[in-house]
Image (tube, rainbow, N blue to C red; front, side, top):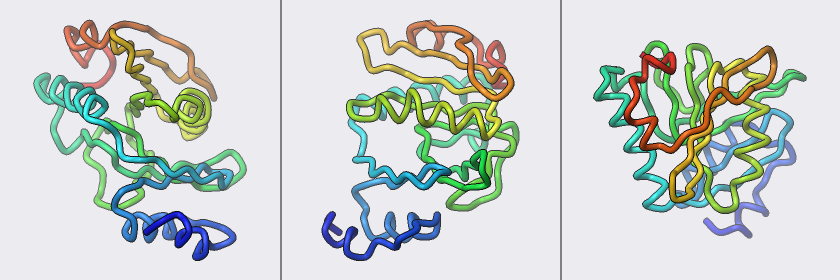
Length: 184
């Protein structure tokens, strides 16, 4: 499906069901929508991006976090302040217990959402999603820059916003125990 076809068939108000249908018709892009209704079209991520997510998943699994509590690129239903509901697809999610199956999962039981910052996603990942995830009550939000150190900025929920808990290279994170970060 190309952009013209999406535009011609776009409903005036886009729901999560609409996003699901769009993703079914377009296997190349991911579609997200904020609780206030702003839609984003995200191109596929590159190899380096996927390797970062895989390394973090392997670190979690090696420490004993069950595989059914860790997922890459799964849809989360994000509630907003004003009753709106959005859908985001974090690069990695860790739950306290395995969630039920679905396309847009609730944030109940989410311990961590992680976004790997890619060119073109900086603003959405560092500002918009950080605010949305905080409003949704997700306890931790980590951002991984694709700089040479693959710097991880760990945010912890403090009331209705995140504060920076730690910033360190990914290699340092991978030499810690996930339990040190509340992820066991």
